Each structure stands twice: as structure tokens, then as C-alpha cells.
Image 1 (cartoon, rainbow, N blue to C red):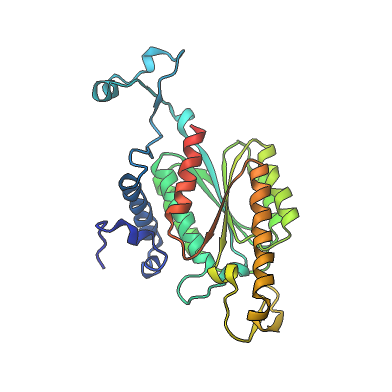
Image 2 (image 1 turned 45 degrees about the vertical axis):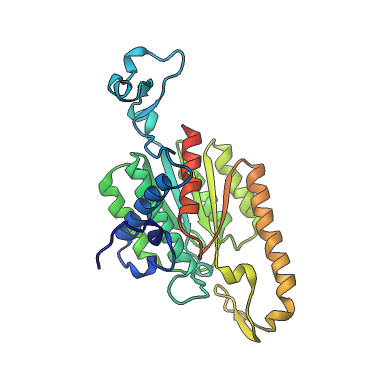
Amino acid sequence: MEFRLTDYKSYLDPSIIPRINNLELRARLVVEGFMVGLHKSPYHGFSVEFSEHRPYMQGDDLKNVDWRVFGKTEKYFIKQYEEETNLKSYIILDSSKSMSYSSRKDFNKLEYAKTLAAALSYLLIKQQDAAGLVTYSETIKKYLPPKASKTYLHQILYELNQITPSEKTNTTESLSKITEKIKRRGLVIIISDFFDDIDKTIKALKHFSYMKNEVIVFQILDPMERSFGFGKDAIFVDLETEEQMATQPYQIQKAYQQAMNEFTDKIKRECINSNFDYTLIDTSMPFDKALFSYIQKRKRLY
């Protein structure tokens, strides 16, 4: 199949992406579609090339001014060196059984999360930043420390390809163990549905900020998990415990939606109070919402 970026939006669409089996190709098309869209959008001119220059500030040494850039733009930019530009990023992905839920056949929460993690890794390394990957369920399943090498991207994508949903969620213990592995402050990106004890989870998340890390939280939900729009009697099965419950969804839909809104609002509120970036995403949403949240965070850091 031949892919062209004539319609960049198609590669951000979760209904199109499942047709592309190769995860590396998925990541590349999502990122390139995002970047094309960014320049076509009202944000035209929003820079995603952060890695080599920054604006001149009073007190900077003139020997570091890039005069070639000045000749083209008549603006002063400072060349940045590797220690200034390399951001260490840890992409933390929930691979517990609850992430396997989908109200459609082709694209569950975990597949959406894997595609997002792959696209973020691709974008990070494209910007000469270091990307790492951590997967967890009841405990840490895989840990790849951050590196900026293009060849390292293949290892990250390989590990993402190997992920299958397993076990219950123990976000608190897993995040605590991950905190111990981070020796230098960086950017921590957590991708999960957060179906766990939210008070304990928020407490674990705060450990990252105690260590001066920047934190982005992506909460991934299926649209039906938000709306509970089931139209007939059904038996619901807990994907992690296999506990079953028979119910009439239309009778409890309003109460369910209220409880779900309270749940997501609490996560959002606690994240904001802790200076974390929080984005709620359902698996019907284009990927550009998540990638733009990352770009905004990255721009603020530099």
C-alpha cells in the first residue's frame, strides 16, 4: 500500500491507523501528518525544531551567535550544545488487562497507547532528545533507559510491538519503582487509563515532581467508558478480575456518567495542582491532540 501525505489528517485518524500494521510506519506517518497539519493550521509558524538554536538573550556570549541564521532571518539565535539540548524523556505505558478494552474490534486502548508512545519516541529522537520506555502492569515489565540514537528507536518500537495486555494494574508500586531508576531530571510521560486507586496513584505521581521532573499525563479511555451508551441489558466482565455483573445500562447511565466525570475531574484537578500537564483522550480522537500537548510542554521547557 502506498502512503502519501496529501491528506495529512488521515494519518492522525484512529480509524485509518489500524490498517497500517508496521508500528514504525505508523509512528512516522502520525508524526509527519502532525507536522504538516501544524504548519497548515492557525498555529502556522509554531516551531517544532528546538534542538539546535534558541533566541539570543542579554548576556549571551556573541561568539555563540549563529551568523548564518542571522543572515537569513535578521534575528539573533544562539547555537546550543548537546548538554543544553538533550532532554531525557521517560515514556511510561500501562499494559494491564484493562487497557485491552475496546468498543470496536480493531483498536483498543493499548493499541492507541502503543501508537502514541511510538509517535512520541519518533518525535523525541527526531528532535535529538533522548527517549526511554517503561511498561508496567502489576510491576515493571520492561525498562529501556533514555537514549537519543536513531538506531535506539528501533529497539523501542520492537518492545512496543511485543506488548500484550496482562495482569492487574498496580500503578502505585510501578511508578515508585520507576522513580528509583530516574537519576537525572527529565520529562516523564505517563499513558494509562488510571483505573486504580486514584489517591495512591496521585501520591506516586508526585514523587516525580519531588525530583524536579516535568510530567505529562495522558489518560486514555474508550468512548463507551465515558458515555456508557449501551442500549440493552448486558453482562459486564472485569478484564482484570473476570468478575461478572448483569445490569441494565440505560437505568444506571446517568449515575455512571456522573461517577466517571468525578473520577476524571479529580485526576485533572490533582494534576493541575501538582503542575502536571493533563490530557484526557478517548480512542476516537485524532493523535494530534496528544502530540500538540507534548509540543507545548517541550516548548515551555526551552
